Amino acid sequence: MTGMPYQLDPQIRDFADSSDRLFTADFDALPPLEQRRLYNAWCSDWSGPHPAEIATADFSVPTGGGEVPVRLYRPREHSGRLPVILYMHGGGWVLGSRDTHHQVTANMALQTQAAVLSVDYRLSPEHKFPAAFNDCYGVLAWLAASGPALNLDTKRLAVAGDSAGGNLAVAVALAARDRKGPPIALQGLIYPALRFQRNVDLATDSPGLSPDSLGVYAKAYLDRPEDAQNPYAAPLLAESFAGLPPAYIASAWFDAIREDSEAYAEKLEAAGVPVTYRCAPGLPHTYLRTIHVCAAARQEFAGLCEALKKALG
Image 1 (cartoon, helix red, strand yellow):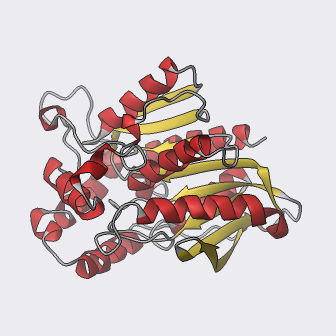
Image 2: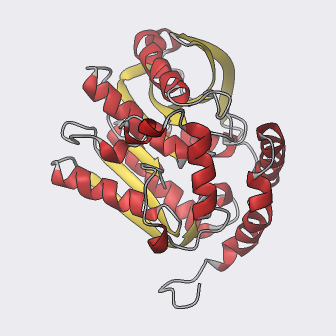
């Protein structure tokens, strides 16, 4: 990191070191089930307490591709109809679940005072593109039709996600525009991965995420080489960005895919779409895991939640 204009936040150093120890070339070579076992344990080690003010309910949503597990979060004090955020977790399309991102989604419900529906989409390489995308869009369509029966105000709806989940959130927003689907008030994106071809020479040092591991995740996710050109897999390749929902994009300086966030913000702005772009100078990819121990990460997350709360009214 010599010569970098910023230094890694001291409060996140232990987390970054743990990322580097786990996410190595040896990890990338493990079978997916073993990767998930290690990842789940690491996520558990870096999770804070569940906010008592938030109630949860696990169930499955029927979609065209089958039943998709979800978890619904809602503030206990609110008995009326709530706006709702559809959340897609990160993990390179290979890792992650509603459990690994429980801290993020529970605290998002707390800070926004909205309901949050976390999607446990199918993972790669067992289920390649477009399985995860189809699951997420299927849940969105179900939510628009069935949300009112759960006391959810689907006229006040946002999508959000981190990393690979940010990719899926943007893909869902694109599809909702293209298919005349449910109106979306905001795209809440945390260091999203939005393409598969990048200039690796320009990649920033990213704890736990190297250019080599990006290639491993892409190979696991994509079924055919031409899928890398599909805008529902690589949203930065969409022909047009006009008519998309406003976006709040939270990136991190120490992130190998930071340029994806920058490029998406530029494309939205050029298309006349309102966009707020932030880059946290001292934070790495996956900093959401540290909102309970790192003040800077907590501040970035609070900014995202405030934008979601404002957009949902």
